[in-house]
Amino acid sequence: MRRNIPQPSGNQQVGKRIYWKRRPSEIRGYHRTLYLNSENGDYLRVDYNLKDKRIRLYIEDSDEGGNPYYSVISNGRVTAERNATTGRGYNLSEKFRRRADIFSTIPNREVIRLINKKYGIGESSDDSQKRESQRRKELEQTRKRYFRTDDTPSFVSRGTTAPRPQVGFTDFKDVVISSVLTGGMYFFTFDLIKTGIVAAFCGIIMGMLDIFIRNRQTIFVKLFIFLIAGLILYVYGYYIL
Image (cartoon, rainbow, N blue to C red; front, side, top):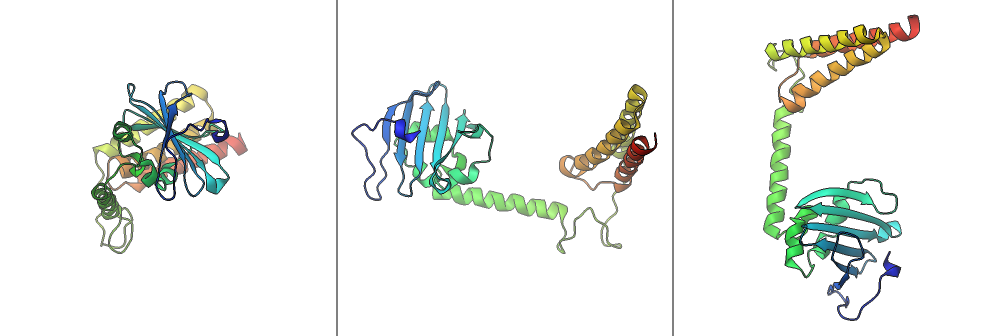
């Protein structure tokens, strides 16, 4: 933690100017460290190993009383985001993005390059605008794919205004595979409860495959058949047998 880190003479943070301090890293697998205390009380630190192309970004969040978090970037990819005290995983994108301007002042261009613009660190204004434009474009494509202009989901029929999804070989294959899995569970265990769970799970998976993987309107009849069958089998096995 910060109180155990020696304070060498040299770079210091003066006024609104940002100066990073340097020293060897005591963390295994990293060679050097850059660190500073920001004006709002955050402690920021970057450990790096240029040979292995590995960066460790670390913050002690002053808004949370100094809670420590770190993110590991290896070969340009975020491979870990955790609370340094508990070891629990977190999505730290917002925390690091709020401090991206400070991290971008790291006085080592190779470290900036290896961070690979993660969390907006090292992005130019043009990069930021392009990223925001791309994000908006993806949101618009998603909206057009699943919603009509009246905000009704594209897979919900209303009168004759929405085309009905066509039953195809993919749906037949889904039903056959799900039936085999459900039947196999019953003949393997002779347990209606487990069989019902498998049937319901198959119904959910079929819908998710259609909507999120195949990008097509799903046939709700096949979903309902397995969901209802699963519920009936579960209830019958739990309360009657």
